[in-house]
Length: 301
Image (cartoon, rainbow, N blue to C red; front, top):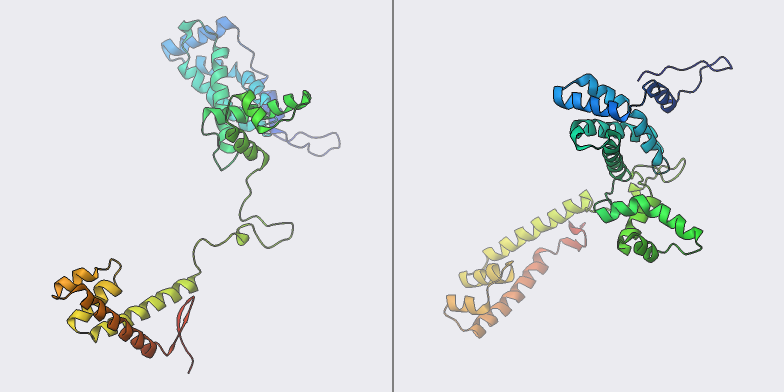
């Protein structure tokens, strides 16, 4: 399709209207009779006549336009719908069986609508909500059913709409929300002239880099101190410290007692003394550090 600006009455260039230009172009193709449709379809199916397929398509371009205008209140850019409908028309030509006695335009209507409806569902929102037949039914009938109930003087409550459409209340509510609120970019400013964006007011899902560094630094310091303390211990106390007190999957007192030929109570007493020793070690060795929620930092002298 080639469109050029048309001179206006005032001597300038008239505003380009692609839709009007497209309608003018397709009006050059005459409509087809039922017999013509059948003969063209037979020629394409039997002989692979590409020109017959082209004529079958051009003779039904106005059918696609008329269907697209049915959804004009749902999607403002009718040319988008026409484009998708034309793809559906090509699919109909490919699949149509002229021996079944069905008129091609009737068969093509199903394919054209299918492609348009899929386009609407795929592009209405980045959040996919037309994921079931029930939700697709709500999407295409909710506004009409709401208006019908209002004209009758009835409240268009979700429960009433769900009953009329034979779907769940949840489907009505969630699809209704998707229809009422369009997607907004997180990078869009909060208002005219504003520098803040929607994204700048969202809570961070990950800790700040300085917090990560501080946390890693504190863990490193603690690991070093734990290793130094363990290095001062005898074999029994070292096993108790490393395999019970500082272990992610600690052994029981009985398991350690059995290893060293002791009673459970005896091992408990060893553990009690070890905890006190570790506390004195930490108080002495960590005296130069300030323990904070963000990590461990060296105190200023």
